[in-house]
Amino acid sequence: ALAASTAAAAGNTPAGTSLTNTATVDFEDPDAPGTQSPTVTSNTVTTAVQAKPDFDVIYAGAPASDGTTPTTPISSHDKQNVLPGATVTTPYTILNNGNVGSNTPAATPYSVTVTPYLGGTVLPTGTVIQYYVGATKVYDSSDTVAYPGVVNVPADDPLTLTDEGQVALEQRVLVPTSAPANADFAVSPRGRAGVYAAGTITVTDEPTSDLQYTRVRVYAPQIDVIPPSKD
Picture 1 (cartoon, rainbow, N blue to C red):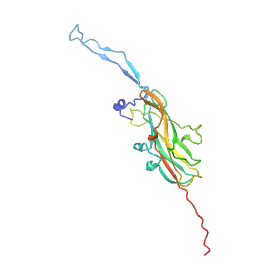
Picture 2 (picture 1 turned 90 degrees about the vertical axis):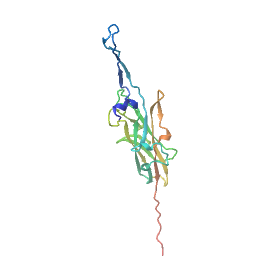
Picture 3 (picture 1 turned 90 degrees about the horizontal axis):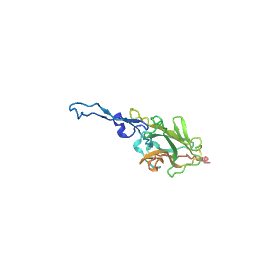
Picture 4 (picture 1 turned 60 degrees about the horizontal axis):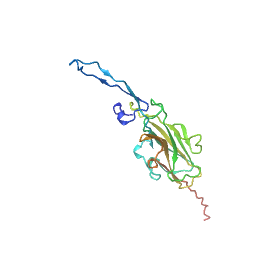
């Protein structure tokens, strides 16, 4: 969160916050020079801060590494020599970059839907992609009806030192036991949510140029059985 003195400048004052303004005027009585007239107070004007939602999905702990390709993930998410049947787990963070959330005065939940994006690569048949928030499964590619991938992300409170506007997301790739040797594919979580731009809130997919891939390369050891020599 930001210090209170900079919160308004950053534009992240929580949606629904009431801003009040009252003007007062002091002036000298023109009919009695040197005499102060009673202070005149205007009506109080109250304005509610409008909603300006925005989000981003980033590599956990590496916000500057946004926008990778299927073949150039950051090193921690480049998984080589993965065995068939393994589960590849990688961490991400969903950021609430706007001012909408269930913890704001407007009390409007901000939901980001997360689904996998393959960047043109092909999954081995039977591969399952899952997303978890803590111990709670929020998406499962084998059952997207029960797990549609919706994650509620609170808004940041600009008056605290803690950044409340983020949720830890875990991507799990369940590689099937039948995955062929040298299978090479990539998966990135892709967010979809309402985003404010030019006075309008539009449900928007995260741009494909702003994704963060996990690459998986399968290694299947081959065992050759050689009969003993008769010599």
